[in-house]
Length: 152
Image (cartoon, rainbow, N blue to C red; front, side, top):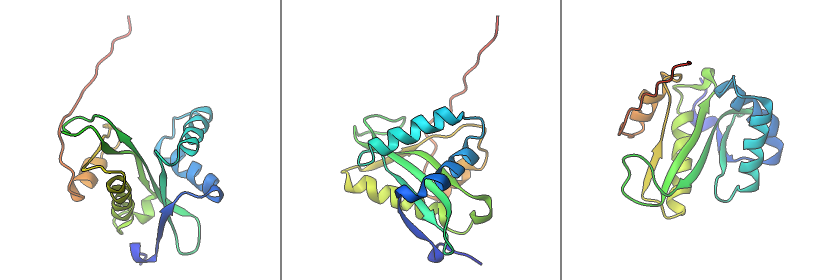
């Protein structure tokens, strides 16, 4: 059985681009190639302020990632410098093995190094596993928004 002890959790490197794209496409399958390219370029251009952290399998290739940034506000938070999980994904075969925890802990460590004392995240109903995963890592739900629209 693979565990997080078998992983190398580290900052994204240029050689990870194809695997990072694969993971992003798995997380957001309806996102266009252009949107992925734009977002990835923005992250790379602002990497010191919004890095991507990856989990590398022992045999090579990636099995998960987080993208983290600093926000000046977030629902339920009291400070104006908040670490924010922008994206978090682990390949299905690597879930429940500590990979997600290792990635989030690395993101939290990065946020602490930036002076943050709070961490925040969000999710959508499209990701039913996300609330439980957040709760397992000590995150508390602070709001639940439901938006409506009607075509006229």
